[in-house]
Image 1 (cartoon, one colour):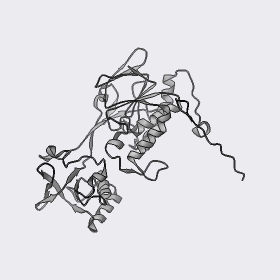
Image 2 (spheres, one colour):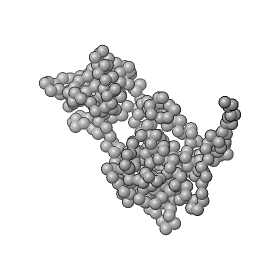
Image 3 (cartoon, one colour):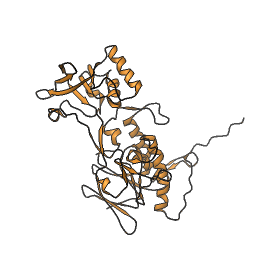
Image 4 (cartoon, helix red, strand yellow):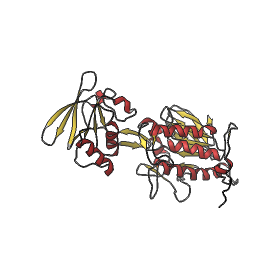
Length: 349
């Protein structure tokens, strides 16, 4: 049995930052994640994709953001159960929760913070008969390492932000790059649509619309796509086919824990502390919903901060916490290490 102050379901960016905020309150954390490593979607789906809306970082790769968060929480020595899915939850008479994974690992805590992002997810797959036989042999649903496609013939299919972003990013990497979409109009950001059309106009990429991929060919690996347009059919040589039609999010077993669910997300009290309908359980990040919710990493950081203030009182009933700024007190790790706040002399005006 693993026992901790705060049990965090999900080790993505928001889950990792939750550890930092808990550490400032002298609360120890344990994280459970179904992936074999921390980082969530940023590590699994798009580690090399730039993020532009993290404060103080004009641009940072998703993978680098995860590395920075891991460095930031290192003084607070979190522990992990990785590669296991949180399966069942029980609350005992003492107010403690026991969460058991699908592998049978048991965890006990008075507070549970669900930071599961979109939950478990799988890619939306186009209805192409040959698709399964070419998975991992030319068909990729995520771009994990752009260098994999250097000097290759790559075809991307889709009309949303992900398809547009990766078309722009891989235009300088792939030998030949084609974007196929079943409509002439795109659903992504207007700036991205404009960039893609500019790339097509100068011949850096090939843009085929309206059209769709209807078949795949190859002996041991993919080498050709069958494409249907409004007027005819054509064949296109390709080393890689990347269909980017979004993800199918699923809460999985968490949806059976008695939490109030709305549109595949956990309802929380955003006016107070992002608590759920079960006392002692909070939900932060993309997994939650409330009026005006924005699914942004920085929103999740804010939610985690407020949730921990409330969680402290649950773990320490009757004990009042006085918030102290890190700029004044610095950070003291659980191993005794210290990061002192720098004293700044006042400037005469």
